[in-house]
Image 1 (tube, chains in turn purple, orange):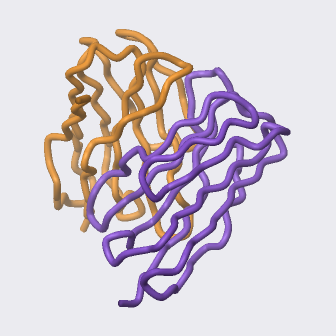
Image 2: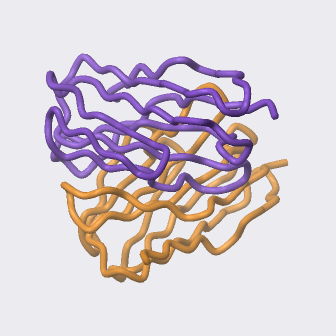
Length: 110
Length: 112
């Protein structure tokens, strides 16, 4: 299946710092999604992006749909302890499938 | 809000048992998916369905089957459970092929 390259694999940051992670692919996608997964739970949708170049915010989170349609990034500003979790990107190409990145594990040190 | 509900949070089954994982969504979504999640491998698609009685294989369908008799319910079946099927199983649904998917809370299956 299609692989999305998500980086970094893990991050350790101090509370209050900003965080940036990204996802790249060799294929074009029509939709980019960002999810967060808490331990023992299912992923929860954070942001959905539907247009190349689109920049969307959800509170302290900002995500962009790359202009080439082959990448996306997620920024978290002023991190707090509850930001801890695994963040997944996902891309959709119009078929009935979502391709997921392998996740970025975020640890926030108080 | 969309609700995707998986019937069990935790399951322990014996090798060789037939296992049913159930998923129900309450938003009249067309598409439903089953993924498994393993450390370092992310989410891998097992099967998906885009309509009642319709199913398509995902990336890792071997050892699994699915059933979608009603629009709101998508079942994953392990015909003869094996220890390498110990994993976190996630069900998801989406309105159509262009919109975001919503996940259930996951079922952690252990096969002993």
